Image (cartoon, rainbow, N blue to C red):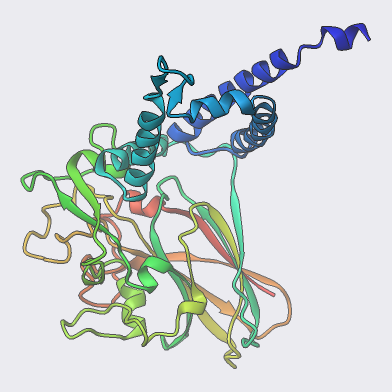
Length: 378
């Protein structure tokens, strides 16, 4: 009984809220400036739920005083004063919500700053590997089941990539996984230089000197998004699809390509993708993977390398071209087998053709987008 008498509910709630808020503040800063670790993210999530429960309890016990803050006037007589805190708080909160949803440039700059801070430790290996698991096995596919195990490299942030199967002779069989922005040709962000005289020769996403938000304007323009084609993004894959526009570019065309079933968001961590091939009837097939990242300039693939190339110098800022990995897998046996993918070359810097250039000597950080890829055939 003495313990119950000494237990102060109000103090308990206040201290719990203070401690929870302190932990959430610290973990929020850590996840903003660093690539998150599972332990930090778990702590942030659990304490957040705890704070939510305590908040409901606090709201229940203090509902009457809280209602006073939502009154336009304090007091009930002629001496009552207006509660100016109410409209100011509502206005500021509404502004932050609306501006954030519309990607207001200064707020977007804060987000980009966080991305850059998280990226600056790219030279160091992660202390843990975070995997995403995805099942893209289609019911109408009766071929062999395969799993693709991709471990990201230090320069993997938010690239575009595609995985597909083709015959040993190079005939396209099927897509396996395609990032949605590429599959739908839906590159919403319009990117323009703030100063056209600037020249970049280092990977801006991992630069300690320049941040993309400092030298580029990022805006969402729904009216022109369908006009911002990116044939240089994954030229080998796009040429395999074989859909050519009237301008001669190879890009996905809405309504003509049945690749929605193979489309998904860009997975930002290492991933394990489970899928099934069509009933190909082939003993061997090639599994290919193409990946590309914007703003990864280097000394050779600088922003002024091809000044008269409208695609390379356009608003995609592809910089270093795509790179292609390949594994030739044997389907003739029932035994489970593993096939590591090997780097076989790079795509054209502006997507003018679908050829694979085996000379990758001028690439730098692009070669470290991926640590390794293994195809498992069950």
